[in-house]
Amino acid sequence: MELETFRALRTPAGSRLLAACEGYREADAVRLATRLRKDHPADLVAAALTQASLRQQAAAKFGADAALLFFTREGLEQATTRAVAEHRTRRLNGAVVDLCCGLGGDLLALARAGLQATGVDRDPLTVELARANLEVLGLAATVEQAEVESYDRSPYDVAIADPARRGARGRIFDPAAYSPPWSFVLALLESDACVKTAPIIPHRLVPEGVEAEWVSERGEVKEAALWSGRFVSARRRATVLASGASLTDADDPGGADVLPPSGYLYEPDGAVVRAGLVTAVAPLVGGALLHAEIAYLTSQELVATPFATAYEITDVLRYDERQLRKLFKDRKVGRLTIKKRGLDVDPADVRKRLVAKGPNEATLVLTRTPESTVALLCESRLRPLPHSPRPSS
Ligand SMILES: C[S@@+](CC[C@H](N)C(=O)[O-])C[C@H]1O[C@@H](n2cnc3c(N)ncnc32)[C@H](O)[C@@H]1O
Image 1 (cartoon, helix red, strand yellow):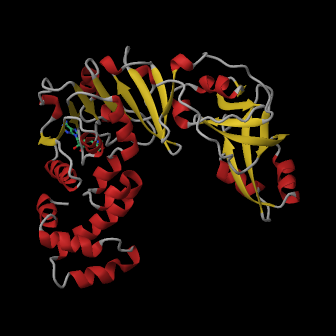
Image 2 (tube, rainbow, N blue to C red):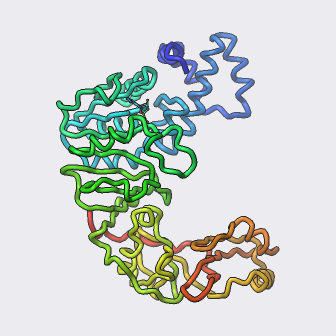
Image 3 (tube, rainbow, N blue to C red):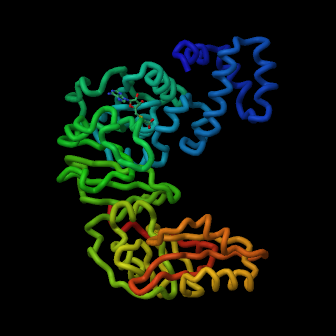
């Protein structure tokens, strides 16, 4: 979207156009565009339809606010979700400069919490989007257009930064793909700061004296935030949203017994796995690892924890596809969820080979013990577990 087009969307005529596109369905797009083009320029109609579509997609990140906010596709893709931004904000205090503020995912949360906040971004359209987004929500913060490398941070107590990670292909963590560059990130982390990085950051890249916090929301690991200076209270932390419960290396005994599967299987949350804190979950559930190098736990007890999902193990079998196919045929299993760790198999392929016809469903976990590969049949529905209190913060 061009800056001029965005400004036109912000006029009264643009607002009427946006209202006319609100809640439109893709199937109606051509008919709606044809009708609107009778009274409005074609490029403005296209921009309004795109905006309406982005607002619908943005509800997953911004909730009800999405219907009011302004987006570009790229800005939305890179934006921090409201829950994650609010979690970060709760750890901050003082006057905050948000370097690389984008369209305002973090900045809106800072302003909403009443922190004195300034956003900085190099892109003129993005800066106007961030300003508009603050305005439509009635929030107060300043947004400046600048290159963050040359921006004077001295008036602020703390800097947060969310570098663009364009060009980082696939799941390879490439510090060279960061803009501003990794050298700038390292310099920021020498004072009070928080830098958002990709969850796949290798632990060895986390500088000495810096805390890495892996944050998950609804089971998906969203980021690894690097905290420095007065914000450091651990070396590694896993935080699970919405509860906000967190585990750190201080909770980790550093090892766990290895026992055969029995009773319940615990699948640790992705943030716990990324943070290398699986063995910190073992004492919480009275459990043991299935294998020293695989992130599954087993326990005779069913314990409420936000850090892992529990499944009741109903059958412990050898991973023998012929026997499993027969079993699913006998049990009329027509829907099969397959989880695997520590085995080089493609669950989609395995499912095709094993699933039978019938009304029943099952969850099959394929993994290894020190002795052999195993197939664990589990109760397919997750047990509703209440959240336990946070063990540390
Ligand atoms: C990942 S996005 C920020 C998303 C933001 N935290 C949010 O939640 O909406 C990164 C932003 O950094 C900006 N950027 C990249 N390099 C920059 C630089 N050297 N100086 C200023 N801004 C930069 C880009 O324009 C982009 O808007």
